[in-house]
Length: 457
Image (tube, rainbow, N blue to C red; front, top):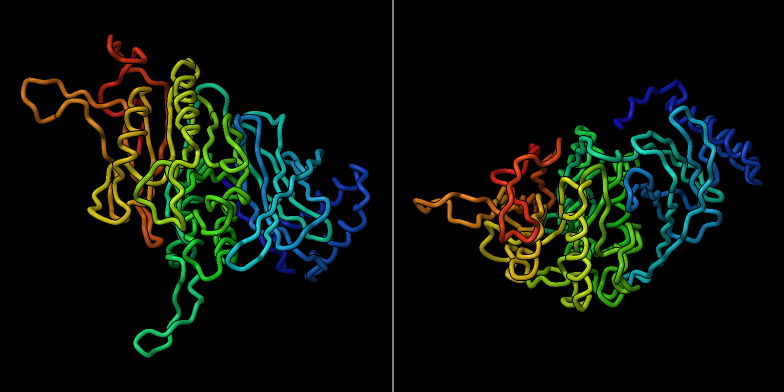
């Protein structure tokens, strides 16, 4: 759902914020919660242009789908100190807040700075498919932060999403000396363009955004916690209103932050749980269903050789991710309600890059045969450090005379970025596959010729 434009009244407070605030206070009172008086004081102070006493605030508000995008949503935010009664008030599009859902709090300590970060996740269930909701995220002593979202469809329906990776942050506030002259630089491979990409997502207003790794390059930063804060400050204008569904890249691997370096990533995101995961691997791979599409996000750091992360963590799942992925693909291909299988990951199998973080042999050996075997329709990756996208894998050389050209059922799309400059594609999956034909030696009994039916770019 695309947010309606805000209108601003003379006090400088947006009309939407004022109406939401009033609805929030009414909802708190109606629900009989003991903090009704405090909420009223907070809204009153905001309406009069005064900053209410709130420390820490609700920062980095963002959304993630649950396993069923039609009925589940997770609302997340973070703070630098512990908070009490972290919760979400859920309302309809008319501003009637009728449910309160408590948030679960996690934390991690950034090894570089010794800073402990607290993240809060409220799992909303029993939602209606294709329905719009308003919500307020709040904890004791903080002003509420508001957002809106629309749940996904059930059954065959149009599904639209955007995708890019390697965004970085638009923060260029570090002073440095270059050639004897003082200048302002970015210490985590971001650029001002990183701010534009978030606005680009909102111009499209997709159902969700697939973020294919290397979110903010915090592992390179002199202040990793600040970099994550900057990333969420830039992304929340979109991510609070539509889910940003990630896959971990090598630059989410932060040396010292957990055994394999992903403690920060695992704390900030709450994605659907997956069978076979442990505390070490929680949230690194997952899947969800939206309409007739099964979206699968995988963690390539488990297998890849080309890795710019803080440590070499290859093999950390001990084969559990491979087994889970094959089970997901088998189930999705056998499900007559699934028309599309989309896989999101970071490092790529095919790339024009000749060196550095280019195409990865391990991925071609381990992932590509599996993705082909189960007729995956679209694979999205990033992080090649060279412009490259729109590769198709062919089973038969299209240049060989006297042979039919049969395109492999897996279509690889690589959205390349690097240094905060993105090539972003919008994918609209419009209708079920129709140009299928049986083949005796196909493990699924079906294969498509040409570009997957209904996919537009």
